[in-house]
Image (cartoon, rainbow over all chains, first blue to last red; front, side, top):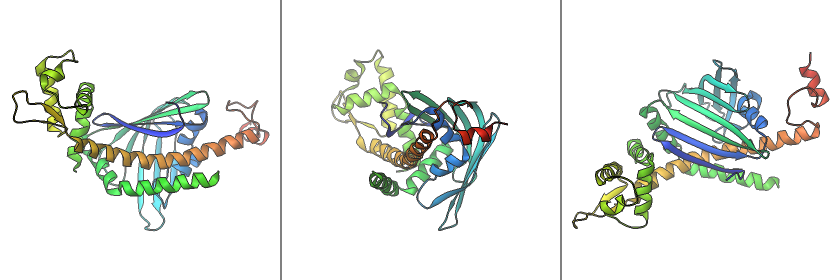
Length: 165
Length: 133
């Protein structure tokens, strides 16, 4: 159950997506990787070919965050942002999330918890969607971007990990 | 496959009794009476759950016999799990990048003799200088 890796995705209700993932690092470090701009922009990049030129995080209740991704080939940009509702250092953060691109309408509440056990950290991230429309939008975009490409990306990552050994 | 049919699938799966009914049907067809046995529920209550499952296309009822055994329909479940798998794969790719970053950060910490504790006493020299007034 507490093995590192192996992301588990479930849908506890019809408007909630819950991700559970274990990382082989203490939770302060994992918390930093989720909340410090210079660390976030190194991994939260989406599919291949995207970079994150804007990553602003004002980590306090009422503070804002804003992410902008840019595709180097097509020049296309995508942005998301929101407000911190809860900030409990190294334990829990809750934010609103709204994509600026009309990728989907409405807002989601994203709650992330960090739990450490013997040097490993379990991250649980729940995305609660405001409306059915917003969830349908996510489902649609997920299907359009295609499962196939995700697998390719995953395989490349795995190959890169193997090569490092 | 439309988002609204996925919607029905996820809504149907959000309830523990309905998931238990699906689990029971996965091992073979069963009538409403048979399905009600393991649950502390009346037959009408079970029928209500079955209706939700039928609307989502997860369960079908045989026309012929009097007991109308219910059957598990695999396709909607497959669609839902396929979508979830795509979502999972995209995030997993990002999290593997995070794994690599975390290893790098830990290696850096070990090199500068710093523990995970915050505070100036145990910090590496160059780093603590920067933070102290």
